[in-house]
Figure (tube, rainbow, N blue to C red):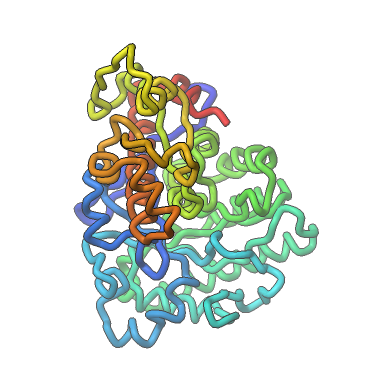
Length: 398
């Protein structure tokens, strides 16, 4: 698109294709929070699923020895053998403690404490997990790190990448079907971001993971100043993935900065805070982007909460299901939403579950939020294909 770095593409692995822009489904220990494998299959709008598993969540359990003994990889071990897996070295759901990283290892924090992981340790673990894709080991620092520490972060990460590539080459067939992604570091320094991007691009990698852009590590203005400068120095024919950017407004900005893939921590965080996504369905219907956004009959005399939510669905919003106003709201969370939760349960029921800390409340909310997130990315791809990007962008302004 003119004046924009938005990209349409596709990633193919075996017989499966993931159209981009897209997201990987965030999980812990190989399991999507609140959702079992059979429930995940009820998301009938889900495309080819790629699971994003952070190293910290699987380092101890199932762990290296158990996976080696099993011999069939992580996906088969946890019952997701038909899905693809991406393993990241970092996990933005926990506190970043970069000060514990060393020249030859990074510190991974699990339930039992700190574990030092070298590039060879990590590569052996990847070999046992047999994922489709994995991120190289990396030393991520926040934007406020000193210039000296930031340079060291880039140097260490490039060294880790070379070590992971050397291990992969030596092992031959055991990692033949597993592709490696370079980690692009640089904290808040433009020169280091560019150096990391240019040096990583010289290596034989499948794609690039842009690290250190979490809002906890860098303010939003700085993120979207550095991001396009970084992606401009990466090859056009290889995918770019970013962690810890998940809100619709920031997703839109990141896509304009040349990002293709995201992790889906956002629906999980919303669910943990009792929030439900509300896509602007009326406005999306007016753009004629997706046939599945079917028309909903509107009654001008209807003053119910359901009708009010429909009237307000011209911009993106969030519902807090803990609020008292949902106590006697016997309508779906989002009118027109075809997810299992909205088609089978009322807002009042989900409010009741959440207030009483019933496990089912989180399950129903997570199903809804994932379903809406999938529809959001469907809209993104359709808007790019139909030259309606600016119109869609206007619906998700921060």
